[in-house]
Length: 175
Image (cartoon, rainbow, N blue to C red; front, top):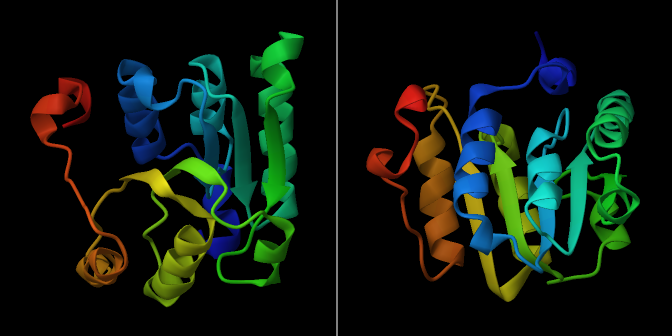
């Protein structure tokens, strides 16, 4: 489908991450959350529904962002929840980063964002610039043989603690 259409589908990893966050909603309560590569905005909607203080859904394509805005509006009818969500453009490692406050997110989430090895380093730079020092990063992805191990190798060099969520912690329908 090409990179410009990556936001045109709800990927399995977004469903998996949404389920994980709903079951572990303590991660969300009162947090400032950033979703990278939000596409339709499913994960952001779940974060808002389960108590995040503020959610920023991001993607790089304005057409995808329009879709995310429409989905947020359709799925979060209550004013108090709708007001806690912002949909904003963010190209990883680009000047878009200047429109965000550094180290301001308690939780950064992303599903299937490890899909292009050319974007591994810009993605890590973006995470490093926006995640607070005590923040948590939660990524869900489907291995596709795209040298994802390089991404996680570089990620481990930047962050002190990396944990893998075991398949036992996940809904059996997704494992």
